[in-house]
Amino acid sequence: IRNLWNSSEDNLYSASLLVLLAFILLLMFYFIRSFALKAQDRAIRAEEKLRYFILTGKSISNKITTRQFVGLRFASDEEFVALVEKAVIENLSENDIKKAIINWKADEYRV
Image (cartoon, rainbow, N blue to C red):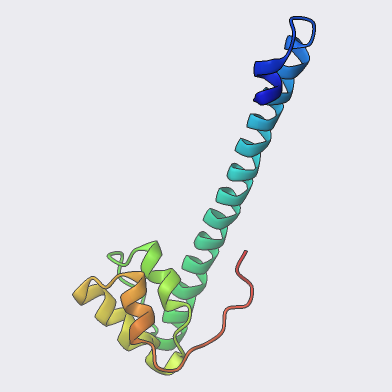
C-alpha cells in the first residue's frame, strides 16, 4: 500500500496491481482454510453418527449440532453414548462436552 501511495504516475498501474494481487492472495488463503475446515467438520459429523449407530444400533438425534459432534470426537467409546444423550438434553456447547470427557481419545488428523 505504501508503494501505491508513494508511486509516481508511471508506476501507479503496477503498484495497484501488486495491492490487488496481495488482496486476492489473502482472500484465497482464507477460503482455502475455511473450506478445508468445513469439509473436516462434515467428515467428523458423519464419523460420529456412524460411531453412535455402531455402539447403540440406533440413529442419533437430529438435535445435536455440528459443533457438538466436533467436541464429542474426543470421547472414548465407553462415555460417548452418555455424553451424546447429555449434550442433547442439556444443549451442551463444544467446550462443555470437552470438559465432561474423562477418557480422552486423540484426534491427530485435524486439518
